[in-house]
Length: 219
Image (cartoon, rainbow, N blue to C red; front, side, top):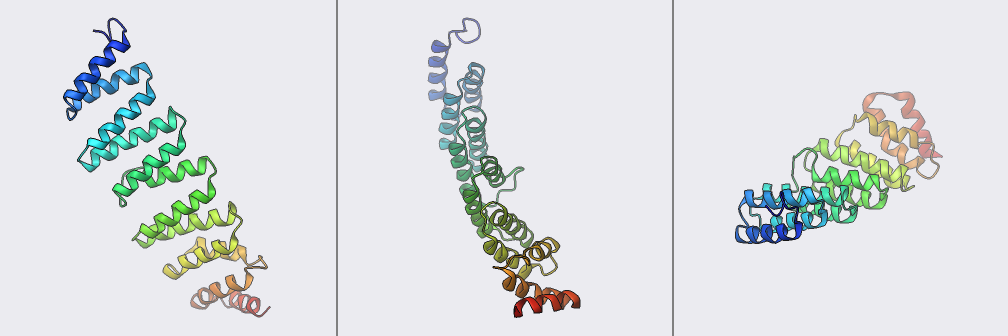
C-alpha cells in the first residue's frame, strides 16, 4: 500500500526491509524488495541488497547470478567500472572454469578494453592464460595477449614470445605465423622471429621462406 498506492517510498522501504530481514532466504521476499528499489531508481541501495544476498547465498550458481547483477548495476547505472571489475573478478575466483555466456572473464576483458586499460588487460589475459587447460583456449588467449603487447603496449618483443608459445603448441597456427612474418621487419626482433619461423618453414617444406629466415639469422 505505501509503495504502490501512496507512493510513500520511505515508509514502504521500512516495511520491505523488515520483511526481508525476517525472511532473508525467501526469494519471493527478496524479489519484492529488489523490484521496489528498481522502480524507484535506487540503484546503489539495490546493488547493496544484491551484494547482501550474494554474501548469504550458499549455492554457487545463485551467488554468481547475484554478483553478475551487482556488477551490471555498477557498470550501467552507477558508472563505477572499478567496482564492476572487482565483482566480476570475485566470480572468476569462485568459478575459474565458468562456461556461462558471456563468462565473467570475457566481461572483465570487455570492460578493460572499453576503458583502454591496456596493462590491466594484459595482466588479466596472463592470469586467464595461467588458468586455461585446453590448447585451443590457451592459443586464443595468447594471441589476444600478443596483440595487446604489440598494438597497445608497444612491446613487440613480448608479443613475439607469445606468438612463439602458440606455435609450440600449434605449429601450423596461421594467425601466429602471419603475425610473426609481419614482425620480421622489426630490426630489434628480426633474428628471434626468424629463429621461431625456421622450424615452421622446415616442417612445411617452404624452402624459399626458409632461406630468407636463415639469412636473417646471419645478419
